[in-house]
Length: 491
Image 1 (cartoon, one colour):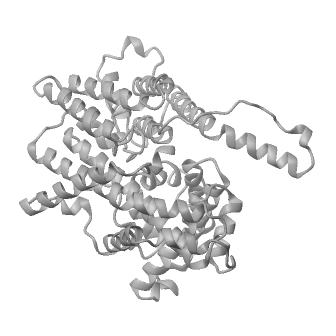
Image 2: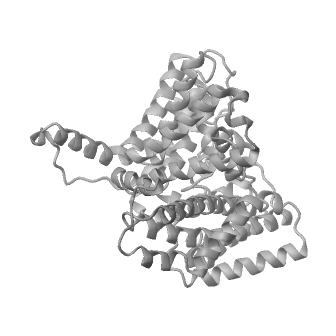
Image 3: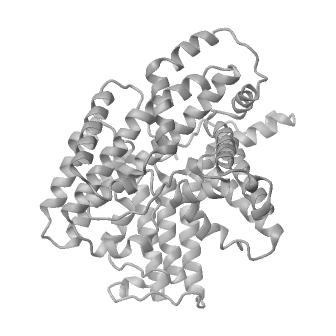
């Protein structure tokens, strides 16, 4: 189920809000139960067979957190007793160390199996074939289906046990509250990846106000408009160009930029809608995008793009690896390793590894240049332009279905593709007024527009009228669009 669908807009969301607000005066925990039930219904809509998997990992992480907090295995005897956060940076017992290993292993094994089993088998078979050992290939009919949003809810659950182990958060005695954190439908399948310590207090105490609901509705409506009116047309252009085989230089750049717009407006729209839904339910989620294409460097880009993921990678991977505290060479290695793993987090494909490698390499290069490198002496507009070109070029590997297609597309972008039959037919579609106009509008909003986060701080009557018009226009357009995916649902 996606947010931009009739089922969600006209059935699921009204029913969820009605059930939630019907318990307005009830204890907070009852509203959390409602969110759990609707969260599992939302998740199970596409794959009910994976609901037990999410419940199982949730239960393990909750139980492990109590073991860590009480420093004993028989927590069923003391689970009801008050817990206090551990001392940050303090020593941990063997029980606590083993418990955190169990939690991390359980989460990573589940994530690794479902996300990388097929990739591992295919890579092994390709390697065996390349060295003439076809008889060693593993011929299996067994293929693993990727559970929806497993990367997101797994990272969120891992952040909980890690925060408890570090002493940055208090373990939750009540399974209902923790289960609500994992299964809450606004951020369940495509983020933002919320740290438990950020939401811990809100799970136990939060307020429902008209101001929150109004701003949440505005967030949701504007996100819906970005998705339908900007991301979907850009996505159609990208699909046509990437599926066209070899194409001309100009068309290939046009298609790559269209994909850059698609993934930005698609994912930022989802984040806006998730933040809006959270506000409507009384939660305040963290900002996830900060005009990333206005970045003057790749370093700045990762401070603005998918902020919740980059923060997670920094806090739970880059810093534990040593960050920049263990020498210059180790810093470059850590940057590259983190981005390679970040690429693999997005998908089991060598394309994602290359995409992560490009970003990791650029992060290291920029760090080596410092504040006085050639690039930093250029006008900011030129820095933004060069950064955007690098980002767009890297997106090709993110979007292409395999490595040969990505390399062929890059060849076309560099002017080595040559003229191809049927180019005029492709141009007749991708440059038609509707698609070209949506690209112009996306360009203006990307570099000159005001962010939803800032624009909705104060809602006036003219703003409300514009939001209403855009929302209903997006609904009308949605009824005519057969193309309506959310890109990050597959991660």
